[in-house]
Image (cartoon, rainbow, N blue to C red; front, side):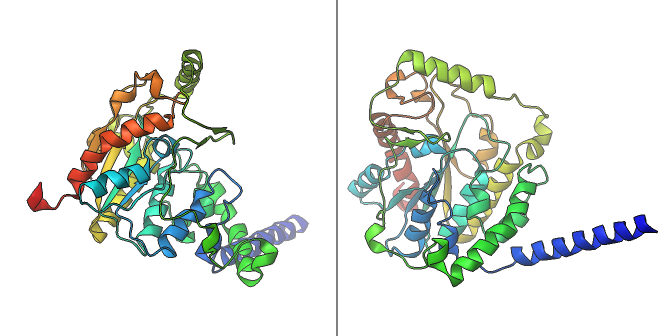
Length: 339
């Protein structure tokens, strides 16, 4: 009887805890404060993305998303100038984040489309899609996205879901006492980074270090980086017929982005950039071609003079890629009758 009572007590405590967690996860939040949760991290761009989307009246014509490899490779102001010189819509932003994870790209697109209507969204891809979501997703995404990631192979799901009630409680308190929680409810125009800025040249790496400047890495450093990267790359585990399961994060969120873009009349394009000496083929190219044009920037692969480290281009390398990309973006923006 004692054991039965103990089991009932444990179940009651578990049930109450679960109900409290669900209740906390459903607390309302201020999305602007949510965007500030990453201010002290390498993902601090989340605040600027929200501010650019909601507080800046300038349109967004071309939007770039992807990992840091793409953030380091596309000079948004330079691309905008090239488009303006052709008489085309020229408001370009690079909303790429350090690290891989397609779920964060979908969350950003969803946020942007609340207030803006880009004509083209460029999605950065690498030689092989990631299997898992982004580390910043649980901080930035709305609760519904965290609760329903859209695919069953999401290994980040338990930790994301466990964090959600704590996040919502913090944000709920921040709405009541923003100063005490350190999350502002008021947009500070003086601290705003502007309608666009150059994300190339200074690369924030996942370990917290920052690579700066326009100096290519040495051959020895590039070789070390490539060996380390390739040693950590897992080959495909499941057959092609099960790619939706193995690469659920990429495939699910690309499909979500395509469906959302279609509803808003937005074009998609995919830009692939290899690491130094990396393969110039794109494993998922047939999948991406279902949803938009695919541009293969494989020409940078052997160019040691363009790389800041094994994966990221120097700002000079970014100028080369941006100038190569400009006419391709222009062709997507040209009215149908002028193509």
